[in-house]
Length: 260
Image 1 (tube, one colour):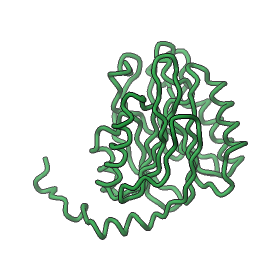
Image 2 (tube, rainbow, N blue to C red):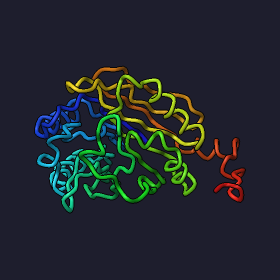
Image 3 (tube, rainbow, N blue to C red):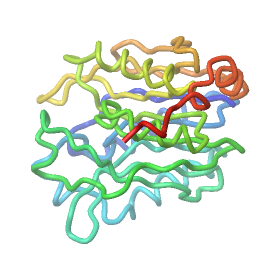
Image 4 (cartoon, rainbow, N blue to C red):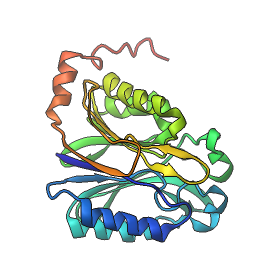
């Protein structure tokens, strides 16, 4: 499968500008053979936390309309990052995946909210773990930014067969070292591809790290962006996952009888 990541600077609190940016990227940068496009975290309004109660999407209404049309127009699957999303009076950080027919096939509310960015003051955490989903006859999983620091979620999906893990983020430049090494660790410990899409630039509050990456099941970074706006594209061979899981059988060797 061919995967393309769009790393861009998310405009703070400006949904229309961010929509225009994404439409421009699809029009000008989409590689013809791309199967899956990946977007960063909170791309609709960024971390405009104080205003999200008014600006967040209403139960994914605008997100569904916009991303569904893109998926159908370009006939690609879209791991559409995450958006600020209001439902039942609370604002969530919601990740969404659409297939190439424009159908929403997966959504997940971020469960680990970032205290360093005051996320818990303005948003509500999800109440269920991220779960695997099927795309292109492959079991996949996805998490959001700070979730990366909690390996249990990704391991749980890998145990259930996930071979490709997407990480969508607005990860700060101040902790770039953590971003790179945590993503690599998640790939190694789960013998899985990790597809990590970050934002970049400065929103007047935080400078974001960029360095979106595609990491193979051995932990090798096979494609990586720099710190500025860019797209990266790579073909990944999912058969590599099974090869790694046979050569280093961590799942067969787990001592779940001893784990609490």
